[in-house]
Image (cartoon, rainbow, N blue to C red; front, side, top):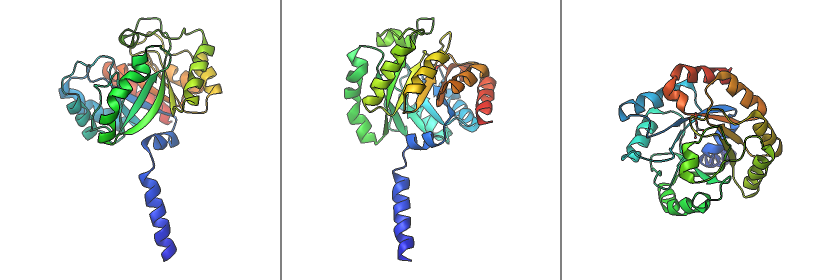
Length: 257
Ligand code: 1GP
């Protein structure tokens, strides 16, 4: 009997420390949905968040390069109420912190040399993150050029890594791993003309031992398939949720199958 209680205490303690990021990793590969608070009208937030969650997205990210929305907290709360998956902040800056999220991708823009996005915005946000008790997931964020000039490049005032130079991407990803990041995110930028090239994903994955997230410009099932085959653990889909929910659902169904 005593053993039973001891085991129960150990199991329940472990459950409490079973982090969102750990849970997501145990269920990879998968699709993560990105909801942009500046692009989704308030009246549609609940419906869209409920839809992506029902489709089987592993998590919902919330964030944008330039926040226009006044009531960011209200947006996160609506998503949280509608979703049965974890809700994680994906902030473009220290103003995008909310108590209603479950966690935060603590992004360091490793491909750039702008100190604001390497450490500055982070310092401004830590006290809120701490007081809200958000789970912090340190992520090395790496921009890969995509053919068009993206909002994230403009706003962060950084240049992306050339898409035909996988070795430069590998060096940045490894630097992130050695700095203690828990994931690397290869980003082509929202609405990118082309996703991150498979060759870059393949080379980075070959050299990395932490999870690899890839996002930006993924609109077709065939692109998703290639990126997973190249080694992506998670794909982030954003724009397609607004432009073609049916395609989003199809891509998720393909991953699940
Ligand atoms: C952007 O990687 C995400 O940060 C998603 O990009 O909107 O092109 O899907 P899309």
